[in-house]
Length: 182
Image 1 (cartoon, rainbow, N blue to C red):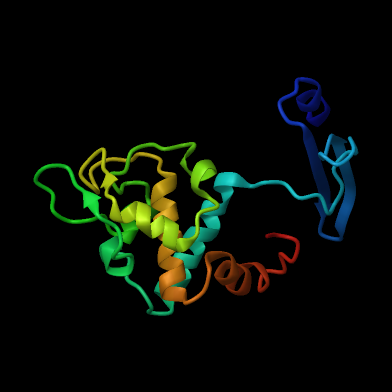
Image 2 (cartoon, rainbow, N blue to C red):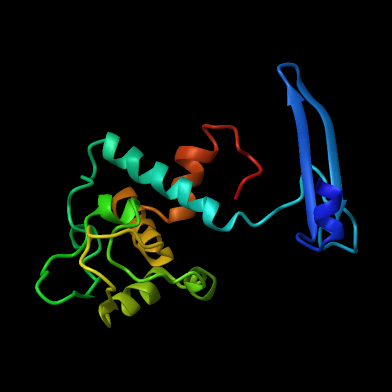
C-alpha cells in the first residue's frame, strides 16, 4: 500500500512502524526524505499541518481544567486585539468553545496558516486589530477555519504566559514522551 502511494507520487516519502505489545517489530522508510534523496528514517521530521489542531485543543482544555480560562467566554476576553467585523445583528465575538468546534463564524481559509504561520504575536495582533471578516454569525454553522485555531493559539500564549510552542512542549509533548515532536 505504501509503495503504491510513493509510485503514484501521492507522497514524497513515508515512514511507518509496526508494533505489538512488546514494541516495534518492523520499520520501513520509502521514497524521499528530502535529504540527498534518502528514504525517511525513524528520526525524519514530517510536517503535521492541521494535526497540530489536536495539540491546540488539548492545551486549551488543559488551561480550562486548571481553571485559567472558560470555554464560554468570548475570544476577545483573552485576545482583546481582535476587532471582529460581525454579521449584522450579532454584536458579540465567538466563544472559545465555538472556535474549538469550528463554529466561530469565520470563513474557510485553508491556505491561511501556510501564509501566516511565521508571524510574531505582535504582527498577528496587528492583523487582528485591522478587523476580521466573518462569514456567519458565530455559533450558527460549521466552517473549517485555520484562523480560528490561530486565535486559540494566541489564547494559549496569553493565558499560559509563554509562546505556543513552549507551552505545548512543556505541558503536552514532554510529559507524553514525544521528545522528537516539535
